[in-house]
Image 1 (cartoon, helix red, strand yellow):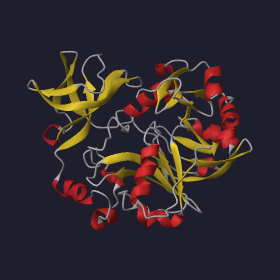
Image 2 (tube, rainbow, N blue to C red):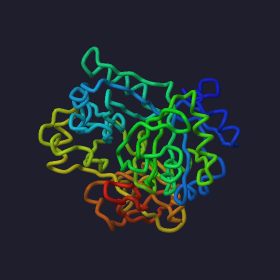
Image 3 (spheres, rainbow, N blue to C red):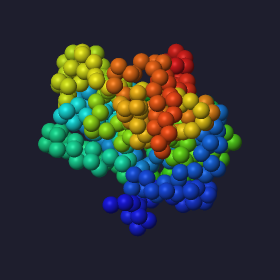
Image 4 (cartoon, rainbow, N blue to C red):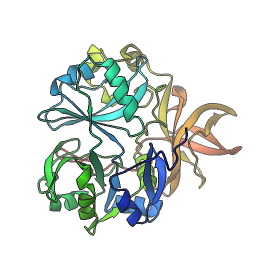
Length: 371
């Protein structure tokens, strides 16, 4: 059933979003801001300065620290080898190796902290409860909010308010105080830019958000720019580029399967996934640059010699590139960079080229310098 005003949940910052003039839309069962000033303006501001995103719809889940081995039966990532305060990107897989969700796992001093997508969080929890050993702690924390501060000036802003966060490198996290509020801060994000995700009690979310927005480098950013930023960064979106029918190998996410897991297996769908790693997959997610100015959208057929060979899963205008870009699944024989294809848009064929991703350079701060 489609979301309605009556069935939508509200975010802890709902009043603030409306006060800031946000245009609100249904997303993942919540009423969420799609834009404030405008998608292109918000996109460019994040690329140049610092944007504040409300991602409190996402699921924040706690496990006991000794649940790592059990989690490795359903995730292909190295969880048992995760150091304290280190973050691992991984995927929840079904028994066929298809992706049920992509997620982040952090080992903290006293627990494992997982962040999952908002649209799938309830299904994820039910699936994990069914497949993990009986009695496994799976504690969802809807009483926590999650803010993302992204952009090249995010570090100077947050260091000003929470001294010490600048010492974190990409995919590292720690406990800090932001404006007198205890927070869990990770140097990660979904824009391709340097930045942080800040987990705080929902009751304190407005206080922290207003403090961040009071900084001259920071503006509020909505879902529209979040999507265009992640598209330029070549980052897949669950439910679009990632589905239960897609494996990590097909999605180009094999980097998330460590050497040990490739050797040992033991995760859901391992036979299929490891077989694809060894022998190759039949298709692959690729980046497309579209000739001309017409953007293409999800669902557009990819065409070669008049025959449909694939499907666009994400597409739109890349504001920092000033050009239309897309991601699509195509047969492996057509996945090499430089391959010329066409995309059908309302009966018209647009020429396109397979190009490397990310479309726009990522600016993550890794140990020892920028990526």
